Image (cartoon, rainbow, N blue to C red; front, side, top):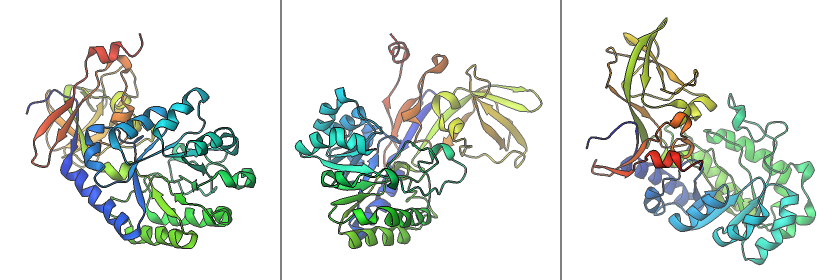
Length: 372
């Protein structure tokens, strides 16, 4: 099947492989794993994912509705602050509603309980385990995410069914262990009588070097010590290495080094490359200087810093060459934008037999109707 670049591909076989790993954790520990839609909300894949995972998590009204309507199972929602004019609708979709502060819990918690919902509070164990990604550290000084022990209001405990914390980003279970110890020391005294504890996301469970036995020991200990249901809500781990982005070379040039301009943009199609920042893996390429021909790969927008990274190749790049950026299912499609009028990449599904089908193609109308 010939497809116009750029386009995202999500691979069913790789997705099933990840789901099998996650299901093993569920079966051995009794925990419930949820899809964090903020990382991946291609609902074409939801029926497959829902065969394994217990439900989905949302960051607000629209994700909660998407999870309820397209995923099914349990729908959990957390927002740093809820809008009063949206909360009644959120109650129609969410099963678990997690609040960020005692004030939000006090304001909206009674209505959630009256509607028969499970109510939680996000806490901040003030235990930072991030290395190099300060933008993703909810435990950084001055963080707006989660209630610290100093701000915890014990009088609100009767409203709570569970506690939630989320402190990790692409991390292994040793960092989770460190965080859980801090959680136990600060908030363990409040866990008696709770129904659940949610360990949030950022767990790279499906990564090859991830220590799954350690994760399972942590989960089982929390389950047994506090007699609670344990939840995990990974996003990346569900679709890790399960997708790629195909782009074409539009032009090559030289300015102190060889440069290739592609029809895909870091700023528009893979913003995390600039936000984290990071250098995405590229199939059949090497580090700068590793192979004979090194190029700086950039997008076609007017942003001078719209640069994906420097890569080397066995042969010179030519106009029309296709490049495959790997691990592009997560935090890509959910963040794409149309800056400079850039077309959005099409979305393609590769089934278990290797057949490609176009799930969605975007047009000028998708750009035009965003702003008027």
